[in-house]
Length: 421
Ligand code: AMP
Ligand code: GLY
Image (cartoon, rainbow, N blue to C red; front, side, top):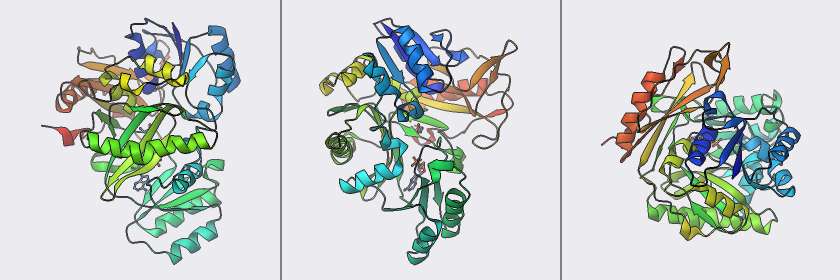
């Protein structure tokens, strides 16, 4: 079996690591991948264009392509590959609109009574400021760009002055280009967050183990939103009853609506939920695996995800074959460059620490320069610890993270601290 993984981050490294342990003993390719993955796969250089990725996939003739990031999915890579008779795990561009257009997603939720924050859509700054002034709100609002913005398109605002400042930046100064040409203004929800992932075959679905992400840059949830600074799995605060409620009130109606709209959702659906006093509410949908959620979910997956992915692509998922219960626990600590998510240096020399049997080091933004292993992005390395409990996994993750954290990199110190026993 030959498998191509599209993407280059820690999520893709985790996918390749899991596949490398499969009973199918697949030959693995990463497109373009990063240098830290080389021990387990071949790297295939590509630019970001769908055409080049498609050409390279056709040359390799794999049995399965797994798409990591959202951008190629939004650009239609999945259907281009499938049209050539190659299985591709990842939704069509239409179905990926659940992530690539927040306006599409919010309107779908409103039309189908799927619980989410109340919202309005604006493309005109003056209409937005009039709305905000006429509807004062004590509890804060969130303003979000409609399009893809690499995790930089959502702004949680405690006061309306900030809402207007951000709206001006997006709608008047075009700070995010076309992605911010329309914005959503929604109520700020209060509660604990959870990241829920589902294998979907267009109709049926099955949950993966639950995870929690830490999105803010600094300890105690201070600082700007990032792509994710750490995760743990399982998220005990999502018990079986709550998961069932999320499946019934959110996942089933979402898949049903997508099918009725002629864009059946096949692939991985990641639902970010806020667990509020009024029950679970959708914060966002993503059309792919979370990063760094994947780095903790896959080590806790008791079955081979290749079987689930193929079943999804073939529209033949039998949920009873795949259990959402985590096997053990995992914690991921992200090592990022100082200054991330804003301005940061690249080219920081890295070390390659020894991992014991309870530790995994996934490579995200790294490359080789002049024969040296150096950083090449904001999120650089992922230190993952495994254990029977999250508390034990956390100990292993931090022990590794501290050894890998060279000058120029930083970590959050409080990942999974709520789980310490
Ligand atoms: P998003 O890009 O929609 O996932 O938003 C990024 C982060 O902003 C989320 O993980 C939340 O922490 C926060 N956020 C987004 N929407 C809301 C909301 N309505 N209420 C409170 N926090 C939110
Ligand atoms: N960790 C958040 C995301 O992947 O969007």
